[in-house]
Length: 340
Image 1: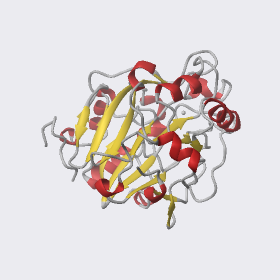
Image 2: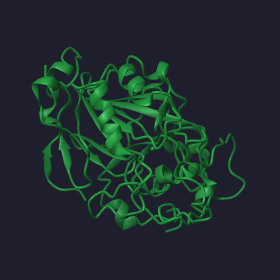
Image 3: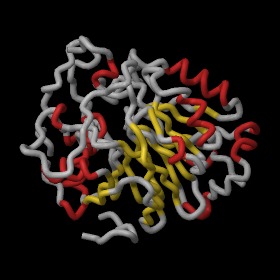
């Protein structure tokens, strides 16, 4: 069970691409451990003075990309999940036959193989490729879920104990006894028409139990910064490729897991974000893969996402930043994070 944050009380979802990729959604296994990110002189220079990255204080920290925006962060023997979507069922999104009536599905064997002993689940927003597996994870592990009021109502409707869910809005800094979670108000990605799939929020239970992907509205979007111990390493986690510049300014993470945009609707997305975050030493692009392909192979790119252009922008804006394009099958260790 999750250790309760000091600020709160303690208490299986059923196992027309005629519009462009972001009209539908976003406006964003594992093998033996290997070094997280090889340290370089440039990277060390970029991160010097951050006051983070003290391995001795945090113990062993590792990071595993779960595909899409998802991450598994292990701090010693404790596991934090972010947007863990692992079932990756087919909606027709990537083959031109998108069906918003696609039924929600969870494959317990697939999910359970990747989540360890999860005690904390952070949810950026409530679209299916972020939330669909969370009900199963919460019910079977007892993990505490942190998310919006919309996420709360959807999860309760899907059978999660209300006492397991911490509702947040952004601005909270939660102490989970050695793991600090800062909740950051954020924004959902936009397509080229400045719109996106399934907007809306819930401030009451849904009229019926959610059963299709269109039953899961966005419900506002959050980002999170997770820090192990009092001195790091710290990781900034995004579930969609937009942000509130004022909200992220001053976070100064060691690692920034940044969602790759599919359009230029957000003005100067990469330069503004990197500068607001004070040019992180490490950037890891996420939400660029085809999330309807199983995690068993190498990541297949979402054809709507220009990963190469994103990488080029990061290099141009912050040449000292180390960029790591993640793989499904690697456990990234923090041993090689820049140390003070």
